[in-house]
Image (cartoon, rainbow, N blue to C red; front, side):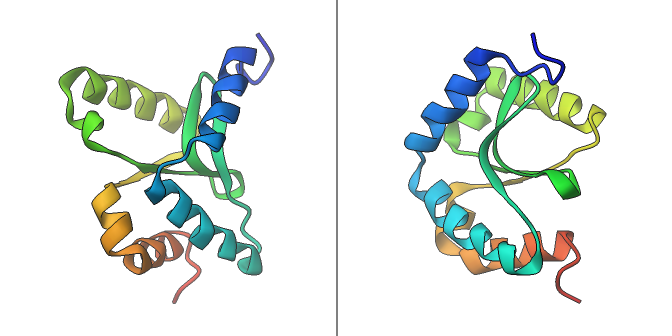
Length: 121
């Protein structure tokens, strides 16, 4: 395993997920790319240790997730809690939005992210 704890399997999974994004992930990705003008680089389907996150802003240690219905299942809730605990132990904040939030209120989601990044006064 590499010093970053990212295995080749995790890298391949991230690449695969980039090719198979949900409509919400695509929409949010287009919006988050606009943060470049503020000097913020966002990575999509980014491997972090043993996990792949929907979006990561490494310079701000922020992970952004879009959680579909599957995340409400008991085993998935436990997995997400374990994952979030690990990510937080690495210094990351984790924020989650539902696909409905993204599809019906993309502007509000982006505003919330900008506020968390302290880009809007």
